[in-house]
Image 1 (tube, rainbow, N blue to C red):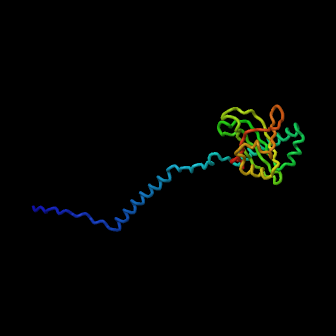
Image 2: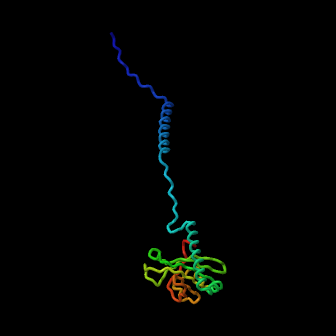
Image 3: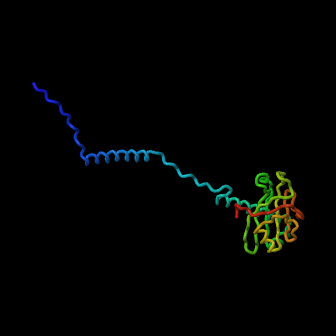
Length: 201
């Protein structure tokens, strides 16, 4: 009996077109898996755009303006009631300002009050703050109200534009009335500097 040797059969060669189809199929599976993972990933929310620090919203700005104008009306009514001739003085003046001094923010903001100044000819108003210069920092300040009457239009314009960094108590063109629980008096000498309110103008 003759035994024939076993000759190894070479593996069949892969068809180039079949190999290309296999590569494309694997690539398609990987791409599908990648897209599925991206779809399932949680989407991040955009960061909230908060207003810059120290800036008021329009609603808060209007509310504070209205509060100051309400104090102005109440203060003038009280002044006219206690000292009727002042009404004519203010009506003939170049302008006037009304401030409420309470000192509640003196420690943090270095201010003792706020108010509004009106130019009578144009009706223009400027909201302002004031800081007492005749009291030590952090010292308590008794609440009172102050009405400034300006007889000089030029001085009024300067005051509304840049405030009064120096004491204005020695300016003869500015007459000041002080109101508190005791009544009304003419403030002949006071120490304060005035500056425009950056949040309300």
